[in-house]
Amino acid sequence: MSSYAFRFARNSPAVAAIVTSSWSFSSSSKCDDAPVAEEKITTGLPYTGMKLDSKGDFHNLFPRRQLWQPKQEYPWWDKDWDGLNPARSGDDEEDRKKMRKLRKEGVTRHIILVRHGQYDESEQDDSKRILTEVGRQQADYTGKRLKEMLDGVNEKFGPCNIKVVRVSNMARAKETADIIASHLPGVERSLPDPELNEGRPAHNVPGGKASPSTIKKTDESHPRIEKSFQKYFYRADPPNEEEEEGDADRPKHEFEVIVCHANVIRYFFCRALQLPPEAWLRLCTFNCSLTYLTIRPTGTVSARMMGDVGHIPYGLTTFSGHPGFNW
Image 1 (cartoon, helix red, strand yellow):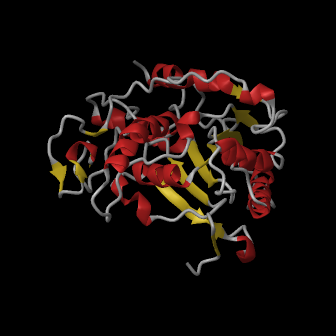
Image 2: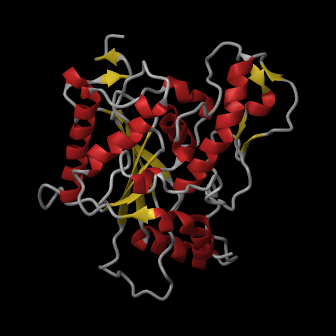
């Protein structure tokens, strides 16, 4: 299957789900009542990571079947991590020529992961776990920061091509996305995706012996969150072979904003950089922080930000119920 055909099969339902920014994620019936299929997108990739047929325990901490197993031994980089690495032709010079064209003319994908703002954790019903006043202010500052990127500030710091705002299906994320999107007129917004909802993506190391409930939560959350990673993280389609060399009109950078949750973001960060996912709890994502990753057309991935809150005043900086940094 060609790269284009693979990507079309992989993402066409998501394209169909994109709508204009004229409605609210959190309040409009057009959003809340929209049918969302549990299995919206088939990635086309084999299930990777946890080897479900493994027996025994990992150092008496959790079942070995729940240990992430990389396709390439650490620290080697898996070039075909998204199933889109160009096939070799057998002609080394031709392959090098195609790679040079890809580096020069290919599109870089920029993915900005935003954790939701501070919310009312005293409620159990998700629909009532809405943003606090601080959380709303955090989201507003984040929207202003992204608008500055969208518009650009001068010739050197030009506009960023923000294509879409995505969001999980949880109330606190949808409310955050509404506030952010109010600063980004004209940017498309996707329907809320429950596969981006919060969960327990993997076991954490270091950590104690996992309880039965933790093992159960990992079994329930990991396949969904891993599927979500495969849905949104991939290199862009290569340049069309029939295009003119140096087509100046083709955008070389595309930005996506994904508003979701701390555990999901930390897992995505580890997976994208091919770091052990069990390290996710070593990372910290403050409310409305920005975690920013780039995917080059060659398939290399780098982190430009992790949990950045420089756009939020110190007096509004929180990690859930913890204010500031003294915790």
